Length: 306
Length: 278
Image (cartoon, rainbow over all chains, first blue to last red):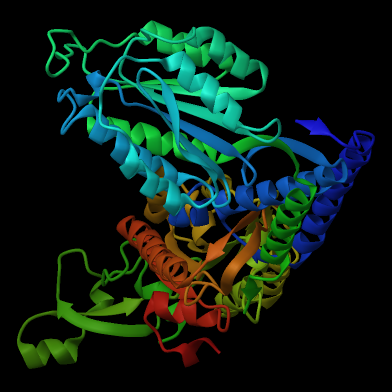
């Protein structure tokens, strides 16, 4: 937490002390009007020992005062706020190994369904682009804020075939993203980079530009053969984790289609928000005033003696 | 029947022996109670010859002794007796004490038992003694009520057979120890006038309300809804019943002291009409 006007903190402390004094004084005045009772111990035994309401009232009063006082110092909090000018590039692996069926129905189809979920979870106004890559990378959908169009473009993803050029896909994604605003690349792949430029270098370059690379590794530990070949459909967890780390992004490993949908859905929500320092003075003042009003009303206005 | 007569009838010592028993004044008694068959030891002067002739067997007249009674009273003057809906319980207690001492006769003695000791310190028969004792109880200083200490003073100063009235509320009555209650009931004709909780019928708190303990000054804040008021009413009634049961178990007479009419507690305790106490 930081303060826009820290000098007010002293005034806030004085206000809290003043409030406590006023509360105590009001309590004494009210005591004089309280119903005189003969045997409090009996009443406590009968109705319950703990004076929870009293503690709650005092707590609300003090918290209200503290919040109202804090509001004077213009507090700022790092909060996740919705991204409206953000941009995300979805890089989807379409190499031959994505035809593997260890994730039902195939890795490629599961990735396509999960990408749909990802786009659905994005904030309104946030832009998305889609890059497909195998031996080379290509733009399937340029950056657009029309999410329906992006979801439709997923149907045009090429069929799984060829090697895996992760570095090329990251570099192409970098060219699609501008120089400003929250920018993210989400890499969905099952394979080991085996062609094109160095993915780690590409991820580092993106990181230097303030672009996060979130990597999603698809595939089971047992793996399977790439259809039509005798080659195993492997996955390089360490490399994917390194790409993410190099750019300040996250790495997620999934082994079935539901995990994949969940992971991409979560990423969609995460990329829809960014952490920003937000001035919460108004909220603190409002909540403080509300608590004070409630406590004051409860203390003097709600009860009656008939 | 008057309160005094009820006390005479209720005396614990041998009281309906035809031969009578020691008295503080002269005479063999004046009030006829019943006839019964002659027992060895009966005073022959008590034989009712007419009844003997009618029945064919010796009949003895049973009389109430004409003796002086000792009226003693303990009255709770703790702050809780200040409470009441329309009238302080202390005022109702004054009514009861006034009726109590008012029932005393010319040769009876009246003694107020205070934490400092009995008043009058020396037995003083007659109406002036009753007035002194009543005034002493009415003007005693407000203080925490310790019935056990007052019972100790009673056993130290009152002769056996005295009539002792205790006026207090449930909180005060609950402080008394069983052993002392039993001892008092054994020595004296003991009566409890138990002040009813003014809020028993309906705790007058609604919503988020506060009350303060009149003895300790401690405040208490909580929500009072219908459920809380119902719970309180049941608990207060149960508490009162428990106190009455406990005192009755040790042989005390008991009556409930309402703030509106303190005298009625004595009428209830002695089973006499309320009008007999005016």
